[in-house]
Length: 585
Image (tube, rainbow, N blue to C red; front, top):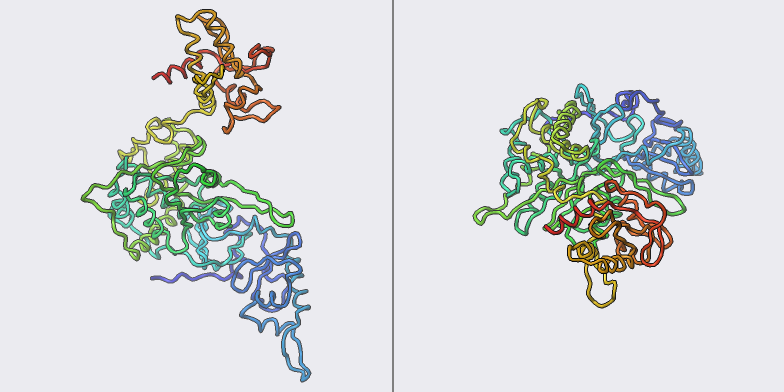
């Protein structure tokens, strides 16, 4: 295999305009004498930052500037310290180095470099987008910068490149050193054919989406949108084998793989990296708060959300999630709409009795992983236009902007892997017809939040007379409107509903709407534990949700219900009636 020549840090500084759009150059020595093995970066809030002799980022407080610490910064080049801050023995020969003078010089060098914020300038392993749209991939022991227009590659040692520091880390899988052929006959086509051996519910579309996810996982930090997938199916469908295949393609240290981790544990482990996260067999449990926190982390990562956490000594920490997430499970837990819209749900079925899951040859798949990386690097100049074509096509099909982001990025990454040309005006695969918005599992059962809130209210159980005969709010409404209902029964229904902050408006034969109290002791328990709950003494959050319903409005003045007059939200009767009719179906 070809050997890539790495440019040294000193050369990188001279070429910084190729990486950061012409920002100022930085003195790599900070005034340290000779040819220092350490590079001072700057200081901030009493913390001094250095790249040590191993090109690792080292933040030190003033108190930590002790002899052993300075020695560890330059290790194994201790002779540098003896040459410039010598300590002499009685015989006049150099015996050691003088710590106080060296400490003073190192702190002064970092201070001369100015203010430096590690939270904004550190880029660990994974893919990043340069300030001018370049693809920057940090492989741990090398960094490649790919021009967004020409595709020209520049390879660097870890260190300060432009305004960002890429500290040395454990090495990741490098890209294949030569161009890799496109099409079904190449290595990508072989992996796609293998993916098609699993029993997907959408046999043409789902393998392509999985292929796109693998590509997105490799360069996720550089993408404008990081798609996530959730592949699900019964035991024995081959989910774990798919999971193992993705790990082989990413290579050693190329992903974070877990079956039981908290969101805090994940973001602490990811640190400043953009490595993908594969969460295998995440199952629905009675207490799913930990799982929901992980899903929220995936939601934030999709668009690059910033997470702020408190720390010791009143100092917070800042973490930007920029990873693709891949989940697998037998059952998918309940998801909020904003979470489901950021996931591609891929259903798997049991393999036929005479078919076994494909066997995986580690060496072969690691080679495939290198070849995938080469295809993505070579295709980077086409990335934006390819994604734009798919985004526009999906929008024209009726997808929302978020759905076009999600599926457009998966399809764009698959296209970069499979094809050397830009997509044209023709549909390139019949399977794409399965991406009609109304056919997607992610949106089939999705309801706007306000409709979910009204459905929750109408299906809540109440027992107004405390006689053990419990019925839903909807049943009371239907009973009140039955043709055989008398005026007395109508009034009784309203008395029962009034105990829970509700009232039917209008006449028994022509209801005008449903009044829902903005604040009511009987109504609040019906929303306890939901996202529409309210706190004592405040308007319930259900008010905000219900007023988003068509033609819903605040009451003019107060409404008498349950023995008191209160301010309400009026939900028009046709809106309530549609929900009741749908429930009857």
